[in-house]
Amino acid sequence: MTARIIDGKKIAAEIREGLKAKVSGLSEKDRPGLAVVLVGDDPASAVYVRQKEKACQEIGVKSFMHRLPQDAPQGEILALIDRLNRSDEVHGILVQLPLPGGIETRDVITAISPEKDVDGFHPVNIGSLWSGEDAVEPCTPKGIMTLIDSTEAEIKGLEAVVIGRSNIVGKPVAAMLLRRHCTVTICHSRTKDLAKVACRGDILIAAIGRPNFVTGDMIKPGAIVIDVGINRAGGKLTGDVDFEAAARKASFITPVPGGVGPMTIATLMQNTLKLAGI
Image 1: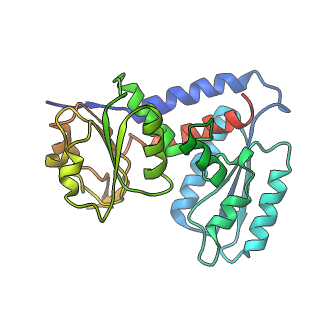
Image 2: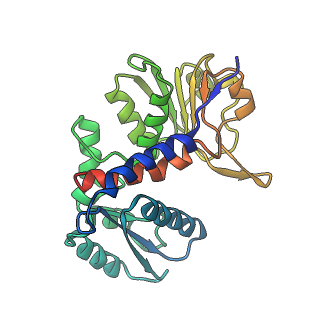
C-alpha cells in the first residue's frame, strides 16, 4: 500500500481564496480585524507573526500588530488586551505563545474576551468545545479536522488515537473527534505499551514534538495518519512520524512540511471571519 498525500498547502490555499472572496465585497468599515500581540524577540514567534500579517494582507483582513519588549510587565500586556477587547475594529485577538518567563500565560489568555478569542484557548471556549456547544475551535485542531474531511472517509464510529495531550492540539482535537462520534484514546509519555495502542488507530494523530517517533509498526494498515510535529533533525524539517515507513501502511498521510502547518493560519483567518459574523 502507498498512502495518498493530504496536500495541506493546496487545501489551505483554497480556504484562503474562499475567505478572500467573502471579504472583497465589504467596505473598509465592515472588514474584519485581527490584533496580534507579540511579546519579546523569539525568532520562531516572529516568523509566525509575519506569516499571519501576510495572510491578513492577502485576504483583506485588517491587521493590528502590537510588539512589546521582552521585559514588558504583565500589567502592560493586560492593559493592551483590555483596550483591544473594547475596540470595535478588532474582532479577534491573538497573543503569540510562548510568552517570556515571568508572565502568567493563563492570566493573559483569560484576559481576552471569549467573543474575541480567535485561538479558542479561553476556558469559556474550551468548556463550550467539550460540552458540544458552538465554540471557537483552536486553529491547528480545526485544520486537522479539515484535512481528515478532505479524505472523504466516514469517520463516525472509527477509533482515533491521539499521541500528545497538549492544550493546544491533543486535548482539543480529541474533543472534536468525539463530537464526530469517534472512539478516542489520548496517549502520552506515561501510556503503557504506546505502540500497541497506536496500532488500533483508524485515525492516528501525532503531536508530541519528537522526530520520527511514530514508526511503521505503530500504524494500522489503512489508517489516516496526521503528523502535527515540526522538528529540525539532520538539517531539515521532519515530523513526528517516520514518513516513508508510515506511507507504506497508511491510506492517507500528511507530509512535513506542507501538511498541517499551512492549515493553522488558514483556520486562524476562518476564525477571524467567524468572530466578525461573516
